[in-house]
Each structure stands twice: as structure tokens, then as C-alpha cells.
Image 1 (cartoon, helix red, strand yellow):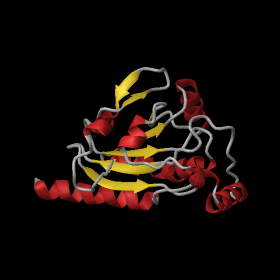
Image 2 (cartoon, helix red, strand yellow):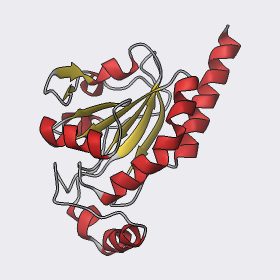
Image 3 (spheres, helix red, strand yellow):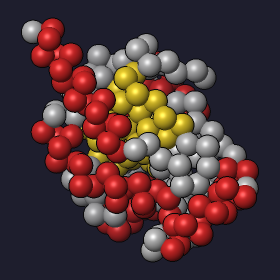
Image 4 (cartoon, one colour):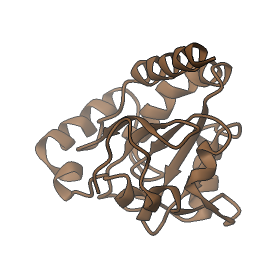
Length: 191
């Protein structure tokens, strides 16, 4: 499925069923129903690269909230694995959901790749992450699924789309904050 910045997110993505840590089902579009949203797809709930990404995102959460932007993190393990991830990564104030079916990942055009997990560049990333103190645990979800980041406006339009190709790829958090600032400026101009 092809996503294009400036276009509405596909219905399959908006309608994708995700589950919260208690196992309750929700539509992914709830993330952007009331405000713009950054939707971060992590590879799985024990991914070293994902832990690094969350660590980079965490200091910017208050800034995004001040801009009126919500953050939703989507993984693909079981609800109990999600609950453990939320606790381990100290994400009690962030909306975190899981998509064990991978339907939202497919609708977002994200890559599922053994090469992205075990290829030479991915293995080099595992080493880099280990040196930085991030270690992958036993996969809690689909370890071949790669992640990505979306910025979806309250109107359901895609303002940013990043697809990870391998372990260790991630959207620069500053780029996502820049999109939030630009969207805020556009909203102010429209008034």
C-alpha cells in the first residue's frame, strides 16, 4: 500500500484494529481523532533499536504535548508483552497499543524483512546498539517486522511518513517535532 504525504491515510490504516495493554480493541484512527498524532511503529517489544528510539523520543514528549500533538506507539506482540514494554520503557503517559495481526503495519506500507533483521548492516546496527547499552531480548512480536513513523493530522491527512528498512533505522525525532511545528504554523495561518 502506498502512502503519500498530503493525502488522507488509507481506510485500512485508519480502521486497523489495535489492542491496549488490557487487550481491549480500538481503531488506530482514535490516535488522531481529536488532535494531530505521531504514530511510532516499533519492530517488537524487546527490540534494542526500538528502545533507543523511545529513549530519543521521551525527552520530546512534553514539547509535542504542548504543541497539541499526541503520541501513539504501536507494537505487535501480545497485550501482556505490551504491558511489560510500557512498564520497562516508562511509557505510562503515552498511548501504547499492539497489532499482532500486522494489519496496521501492512496498511502503513512498512517492511517485513529477514535481511533488515539479520543482514550485514542490521548486524552492524546490533553491535552499535550493544555498545550504546541497548540489547535486544527474545522477540516479543514479529522480529522480522520493521517499524516506521507517521505524523497524521486531526483531519486524517498524512504529514510525514518514514519507513525503516533495518534494525536501528528510525525517524530523527527533531524532524517529527519540526513537522509538528509546521502543522501548528499552518493551523495558525488558517485562523
